[in-house]
Length: 325
Ligand code: FES
Image (cartoon, rainbow, N blue to C red; front, side, top):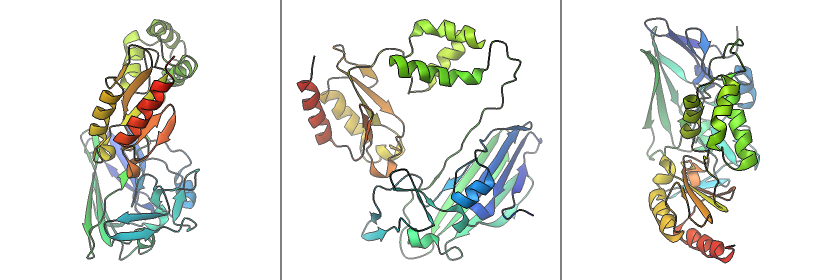
């Protein structure tokens, strides 16, 4: 018997099946439609248990993204995180990311039927979490397969005197079912790498290349065009000499990202999503740069910046004016 057993659920028509691992922070370890796996297995459940290597649909709790330094403040509450603790994941820069190690967050199954599962994490039962996040709480997760959807509902309740800050989230690693090998001319799964390669080389994906790419991959032009326009990352025209990207996703919006974008548009004389007529600058909205706890976040000429303010934009505007061609 495995050390981390899965609990399975199945939609009423049998088309969708999912598996969760309650002992590992309710990891969603599998989601299949008609037998085809829809989430990336990456290193598998054991790697997640041993090293916290994410896969499937992990719950990143008590915080999803990285925290900028070993201490953080919530209201009057100062918390120091022991970066060396085995409970902590760190990124390549030594910053704590993805919250607590999943093995320290065992959920207890409260309810289970064919199509649904409810499980509870209570810090009274899993006190290790409080070493990183001293806010007693109970987190209830219901996973249910309904029609063609998996719905996960999370409910957080404070169980102590302190209010509990919410910074957790799920990070699904979605995986397209395999494209049959007999697709003539190659696999559609090559499309994204090809587009990345072209953009890396040219700075954009020229519309004139769309028919060639489509023919090479046996796709329609509309399919290729649809992928280019779906992902904000791809451009169909050359960018300006400077590229300013300002995050407009939820966490940054809560910290004033909309007003910051409006200020940038006025100060840099460039509409969001456009390149200035003089070719000096492109201003783009982007949707999450991974600095959610320190927003508003921006990427300026490829460099990530946290806590960007109107004053930062003013400094940039002056600097960009100084290096006009
Ligand atoms: S919401 Fe994640 S960086 Fe802005």
